[in-house]
Amino acid sequence: MRDLERRYRQLLRAYPAGYRQARGAEIVGTYLDLAGPDRRRPSILDAADVLAGGGRERLRAAGAADLLPGVRLAAILSHVTATALAGFWAAAEVVTTSGAWGAPAFGPFATTGVVVWAGWLLAAIVHALAPASWGRMAIGLALLLTVAVMPVAALFELPRPFLFVLLPQATLGLLALAVPSEATRPLRLMPLAVAPAAALIAVGVLSGRSAWFYRFGNGGAFLPEAGAVLLLTAMLAAAALSLRGDARGLWALLVLLTPVGLLALYPLTEIIVPLVGAGHADFRVITGTAAAIFVAGGMTLAAALAISRRSHPSATPTIAAIGLHDRCPTCGR
Image 1 (spheres, rainbow, N blue to C red):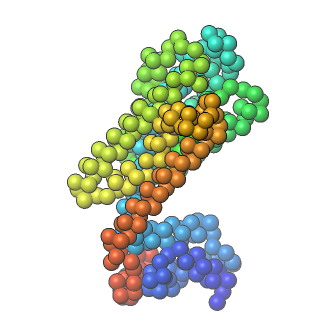
Image 2: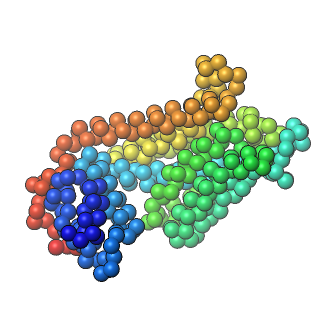
Image 3: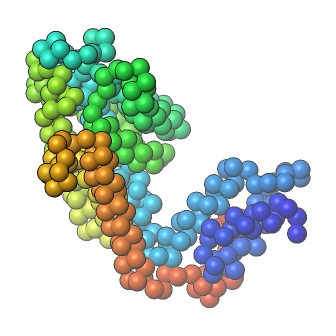
């Protein structure tokens, strides 16, 4: 067996065993036919394609074929929410002043968060006007800025948004990377459309207040309200799609439970602080609460997958179920 063929067969372990027995030779043969004569290893794109195909088949075997479409729907809602929050906080950077409190500022802005929010607004523009691959790269850049602002601000002793603001934004951005490439123009314009409305709300609510309100105070109270809107939207989408026999809305709702929980991180830490005997919501309390939210969300999704698998025992692929004489979906033979 050639090295290239052996490596393709190793990648094929991503597929369920029954599917490998029925289709493995055809899949490997197709990739070998398309590979160059001097290739010794599968390309990155081929490896990603095999792993993605194996993941889809395993989800189908578990009776959760709608999970990936559900993740894409959740990605659209996450991108809209992340952009709305970026519009809100970008306005807050301008209208809240540091002079009333005597807090350090970042030039004319309240904190270095203005760089993060500008990155998300730019990503919304690129997503609306440029090809899908460019939009995904812009979202990735905004996500990188969201993660990098904490160590950079700490290194140069600059003010930054509080952790309960950055954590849900990063989680929403991570989900937004799964935005489908084939999204229609109205869906691509939606994030850009909600940002000005959110900025106007911030101007009306925060205008004239001190930077304390934005950075450390009741500014976090607006995040649970954004989470409530996101949760209600996901529930309505799940109900509407379920009426048509489409389960992707239910999966999207389950996937979004984690970012919705993180949007409520500020009030949750206020509840936990007296329970753990802390004086205030410090880094330990915030990260511990966020970790609990991630674990709860992951366990809920895992439980849903287990229930779905038990409800669809016939979904497990076998040679008889697949059929040795069906046509290959890749090459048509």
